[in-house]
Image 1 (tube, rainbow, N blue to C red):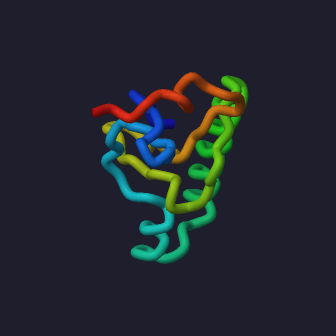
Image 2: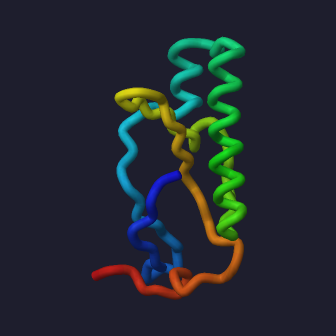
Length: 102
């Protein structure tokens, strides 16, 4: 999961998040580039996505747009990590009424 460092509402009423930069490739782009993944790799990715969703749900957060282009694969020194974009609070947040920075 990515860290959200700020959020708010634009003057036009659009909601926004400011999130950390994730240096990786999204799952959709990877599959388009390399073709279908091996079953073993697919299962590793699926397990990590499920663990991230479970942790988010325990924290009262839901993912509003889970799809391959929102799942980021990141190479780490010793392992690969999965990041997901488009997380949103399951309950109203003070962030929703925060004005956009000027």
